[in-house]
Length: 344
Image (cartoon, rainbow, N blue to C red):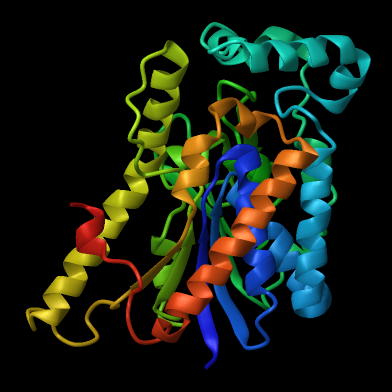
């Protein structure tokens, strides 16, 4: 059976390598058709790599494109500083990593509560700039292939901004991945208004946004590849643990709101209280590894070591394999997620 579906790719820094693994496995399916992709932060980078790669050489090209992306990210060592800084101060970087591993709390995470990326002044450089610059945006913005949607948060209005088509650029990808405690806000001329606007990470308003995928020309199946855990059984106690959980909850809130709306519409349709065809009957699928994401510390999101990325990719492939074996037959027929149970 043809797997025709949309992909919704979450953000989460280096943990986005889990999505790399999921996509790598899905792209081995010869009858897979990705119709639409919505991505935020690391999910936006994965989405752009996937779209460009599919245009370049089909599934094989997409897998190669994702490999290049995460090899580039792994070479950065630390997402808080540009490569030249980590190369200029290797001893300081190694010392920080050693201290982080030896203490029960992360000194770097504590410092982020009082540190601002603007403290560097003219010396600051976004470490992801060199990564996104390697994308061929002629392919990323192609009309052919999957519809692509990239989300960012307008700092002044607090509203989500979804970029698509020729609006997508290196700046929009950087905006989507702009965690304000780590990166300086991204300023760009919004193609929709022609005015300069300032953006932060899209995760604040949609991680990821599902509504762009409700277009009538796209399938009703949406696969969410989640890397931000919904549940943590351990109660956070240290300042760092508390802040991390606050971030996870806030970054999940917009997605949960959209899923509640989907569940509400599905219930109205099932009960015959909505005319057929008036609203789309979205089928939701979810690929995740909550156990692994609960195990990983928040600091690892900003330190993409090759070992961590390889572990996450392997976990993503395993999660996709499990989903295919268990739920593949539901595509086109029914959701493989119990939405009502998800909110219980």
